[in-house]
Length: 154
Image (tube, rainbow, N blue to C red):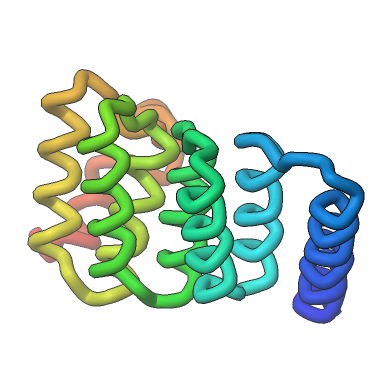
């Protein structure tokens, strides 16, 4: 059901976008970023790329949110190489990636079975002085020495 709702939301968003254009309203960065995000949530990575292309043709400047949404769309679509290309384009445009963008890129590499690339992205993140956000602390009851040793086979 969630997928159907997301697809319907993407369709409605596209209709609103078309209406805006027909009414002579010029979409801005927020409009394009929102549309890319809706496509990401509905699993339409190819449409998200199309919208990013329209954004470029309209000479609307992308921001970190735009790139992050596009990387997330690539990640959900299993397009790890494309996610890396989008990240490189963001870097080349002079924007600084945030922790969410790095984490999404790492997930894209992981989903593609590219563990070495995921680790390399982690080093890029480290060199940008951004730390991973773990949902637990070392005091977490599941992270006892015995539990960790068992997982690692020690």
